Image (cartoon, rainbow, N blue to C red; front, side, top):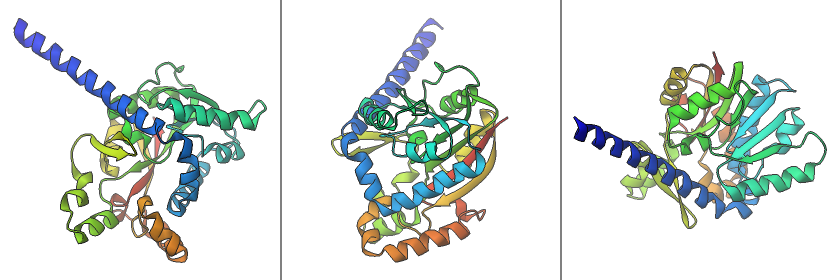
Length: 286
């Protein structure tokens, strides 16, 4: 019995170390691209279309004046829009260099309403007071980088006030464009990369981002178990291409706009919304 107990303690210690390694690797990878990240995001027409829809969803569900926690804020690209919507913004990111970029942008805003930006991963929200925020926002997949998704969901629950909302853009498991593109190239492993279980090491410049690809149904189950209910789900990038096909979008901007308009029509359909490069989900704390 003693040996069995010690084995379990050792397994748990290894698991904790793996989580820390994944968080550290991911933060360092984003450190390496922090200086260029805002500009490359703003130059990508696909990301701009997705960002517009994520922010519109937040504004539709969360009233002006709300205290909003921006989870995985990156270099603060969303902050001008959040402030223009009338939100009081506290932002976190695990990457120190991303936080520095966001803090520089916040300092340029000036005045009492500029964002508060802190270096903190999603699984370290317990340092905030319980029920501190009216809403949380997470854009372009920070929740996919959480090494412990259920724990993150519980911590987000605890920092929201009763009835508070989480609006999140999450990287999905089935991207039709990606499957078709890589099968056409004869790269079946890459075509079905998102179907792997557990964290996947995704290259980012000289680093590795540990990513868990999540379906809308799995995301809903995680957050429902943590005390949320689902308010809204829609797909992003079903007929529209994924962000890494930026060159295609730049060559055919009118076509890409039409494809996103089609996504707006079909993206909430029950079966279709399970697909897409990303999905938008709105969850309410019970």
